[in-house]
Length: 445
Image: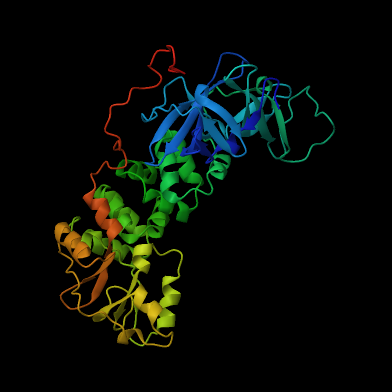
């Protein structure tokens, strides 16, 4: 407890639910907005960045927060749904303060910020940041004339100090890490983490991307707008960029490569494994809004002598999207695209109805014709809608399976290019920070 009320470490707020007074969930906390002040004065907490159901991020002033307790935030119920836009005087606590390197004034040691705590001021709804949780550098640095206190300390020692005990938050940070920021969002789905990254500054976005492992970054890139994808990929070392492209779904990687200049495309393709590079070149050879341009080259393919048990084992793979796991394709050898002769499709529900020892070749749906790779987007959409399918096989003139086009790929091409940025609310909602305070209205910050 602080002098005036509850104290909460900001990392504990990441992802917690926000409720109105009736108990209905409004969204989830994605960051805390603060304003740094001159000298050693603790920063004022202005509000919370809350992600609502539409994945839009809105601003919730602290004056409209009535409680922060038991893993939840309670509001007054009066919430402005206008999209949050960070102002120049504002700092995102999770996005910009965690992992910063600052200095302890007493010893002039460089330390890394692991977390900060905010406390509610007495008899008010205002909050400020009063504590900083830091980790000393392994091995440390000793300033002349300033002996270590308490004898030799442990490497990586952590401690909580007053905000006024550190300096350096107002100095631009170069090469800031992202370990602790990522820890606060570890459980986020890739699409939600992508939304968090999109709202960070370009510098911070690059730092966070560099800290993600290849598979996680690949998943996140697939959910980002094209401009963010190109920006992040361009700041990676070429060898790592090629590794990340290999970890992406082939169709998404091909789309990203196609956004790059031809020289960059060739350099990256030359660094990729030959098979992955061949898949990329094949996908890039088709028009974008055709079955061939939208398909993935990694559907579930089985030989005719595979059994239902074999098929179920394959579709249990957690790395498969639900659309790709909904059906398997039976082909003659080879069983990697482009395959031998395509024989038919077996739907997941059919696999559940037959004994495990049944051969998949006996269960093939051969009535549905496959799609040629040059099938245009409207025809692909009509095919999926007519036959209530979530994926469709793409087969060339020789009868070989090239890949499968899934409903999520179709939706990506049907939606406007800026659909991730589109407002889902039609009304022009005023900015809460510009509404003057008057009777019954809590307006500005």
